[in-house]
Image (cartoon, rainbow, N blue to C red):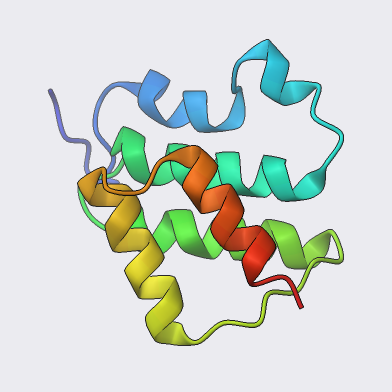
Length: 104
């Protein structure tokens, strides 16, 4: 796969899928689910050459906070969750549970 000068992989569909999840996800009412889906998809699709975990967790946390949902977790908690998603040991449902458990 081609790597662009911007640091993104040449296939825009990898990044685009994070912002256009399946129809059933777009219909979710709960913002926590949307935030978890956004973070999970950004991390697991590897749309960037580097920084997928950082970007995915940052976007998820920012989305949640902008929507009035503040999580109470340490930096280590965030790092561990991002690593777990990236290695495949944390599913979307488990990331959603993580979000719900850390909701302030």
